[in-house]
Length: 99
Image 1 (cartoon, rainbow, N blue to C red):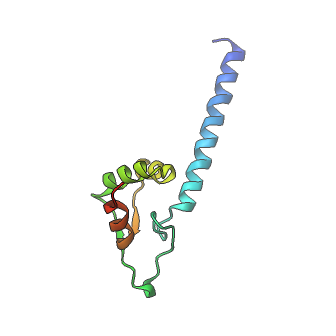
Image 2: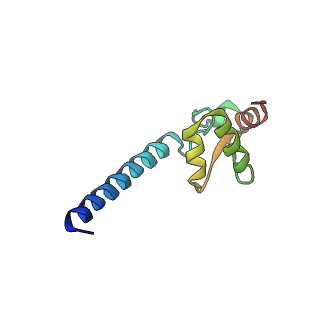
Image 3: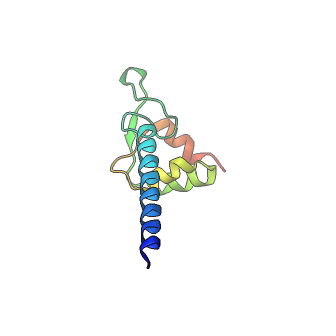
C-alpha cells in the first residue's frame, strides 16, 4: 500500500470508529439503566411499575425488536450491554403481541 493509500485507509477507519462511538453514546443516552428500553420512560418507585432486569429473555427482545423494525433497540441489545431493564408490563406486552 502506498503512502497515500495508507493514510486514506487510516482516515476512513478513524472516521468509522468515530461514527461508531457517537452511535454508542447516543444509544447509551437513550437506553440508560434508569430507563425502560421499551417505553423510554424512567423507572419510578412511586408509580408501582415493576422494573425487571432481562437476562434470559434478551433473544426474544432482539427478535421482537427486529420484527417491529425498532433498529436502535435491536442494535443496542445486540451490542450485549451488561444490563437491560424494562417495566415488567412493557416487556410482556412487547414480546406477546402478535407481529
